[in-house]
Amino acid sequence: MTIDDEKRHLREVARQTRKQISAHAKAGDHDAFQNNLLQVLTKLPDWNNISGYLAIGDEINLAPVLKSLRDNGKVCLLPVVIGKAQPLLFRVWEADTELEQGPLNTRHPAGGAATGEPDILLVPLLAFDKSGYRLGWGGGFYDRTLGEYIQRGRPIISIGVGYADQEVVNVPHDGYDVALDWIVTETGVRKTTANKKVQA
Image (tube, rainbow, N blue to C red; front, side):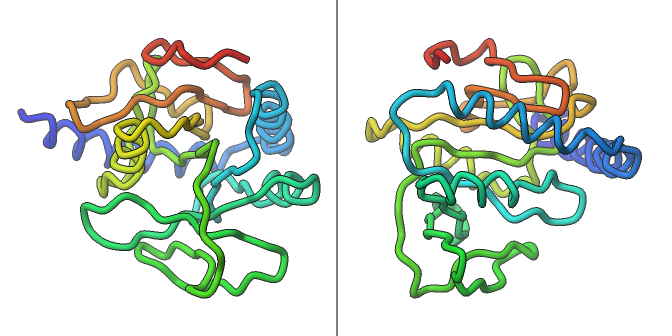
């Protein structure tokens, strides 16, 4: 079985797992997640721009955290898919920003919005492991974006966001996959074992 085959199999299992976890999440889980995310964000030095996402389906809702950060002077960005095999573009998300539909039911600021580059990238996931490797939907957009930033020396901190029970023993990965720096769940915050360069 190839790595792509392993990913496809795990993706199907993880998709069902996340759906069940979300459906049975306790009332306080989301508040706990937001508190944990804000905890790590307040400890990370020298950042101003943060990219999140607007949740689809059973993804964790980041909008309250992003709105709070925006109210406190941070620049909030949303990712835009500009084409297959291309890194993500990021547009500024203000309170009155017009949104438009993107691929896979995503939503992002319309074309007239200002663009920016994130210092911190919040990344959705279907599954993750302790090393920081994540499984997404298979488009490779986040890995390609992180790889492009690393290649040109642009500092960026990547934080995977999900439920604790989405953790698996091992996410299949190859040379194109980029491990995340942090994982935040409703149960806590952890720095991954693959990336130890980020301190908080």
